[in-house]
Amino acid sequence: NVKNRHAGFSGIKAKPVSTRPQFEKMIDSAEQVEILLSKHIGGLAYPDADETNLIEISRKVVKTMKEAGCKDDTALTVAYLGDLPYSLHNWRRVVDKQFGKRVGKEWHDFKVVRQHGHKHYADDCKLSCDCQNDPKCEHQHIEGCHNAECVEHRLVHRAPYIGGPARAALLGWFAVLAERVAGSHAPTHWQATEKKQYLDRLQRVTAAIQENGRNTVLSTVIENLANKINKTVSSF
Image (cartoon, rainbow, N blue to C red):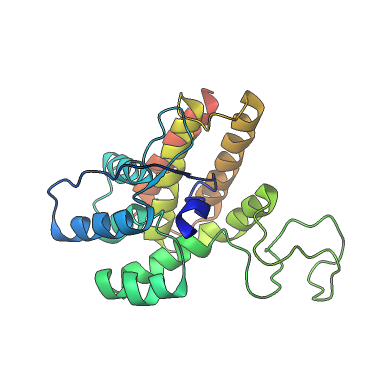
């Protein structure tokens, strides 16, 4: 069952739940997102003590971005769709078709920025070797590698260069996930050490985006979200 294997944007394995979220009366695009998310992840929950439905977290991300000053429809839609499972079909036939190609491109970049590539890229994995860009390197991780250090490595090297809406959406998710992990909504099986490691990874990626990200009309929003993340991590 694909739903039961879905790890969510956080990379943390989601838990199946028996109830579906109640829809709120929303504007057309938001309602489309709700219907789409309900179809794909409506029965999944974050593995915290409250078993928070994943769609509730998506809504929280959008709210957090708005509070940071974001009024960009593309960035907000990309964030809202953050936990929609990535596939070529969902990208081209679903997101592009329902929300337009600009949203589709930014959503694609938002989703694949942390993924292992189909080819041997130098920034795919953090390797403990001196092979550098040698395509015959024997230490390459297998395609689909989700090693936490490698995911961080990809994000640090790639995230600063994705589009403004995708970057804002990424930091919107970081802000909410950092708040959850630093507070009382971390995965129930995590100890303090695991929480600290996760928060430190978020902060290092955030720092890379702040230092190397290109200027965009969303730069102020990105900076506001980065400050929120840094404040949360520093107070943990």
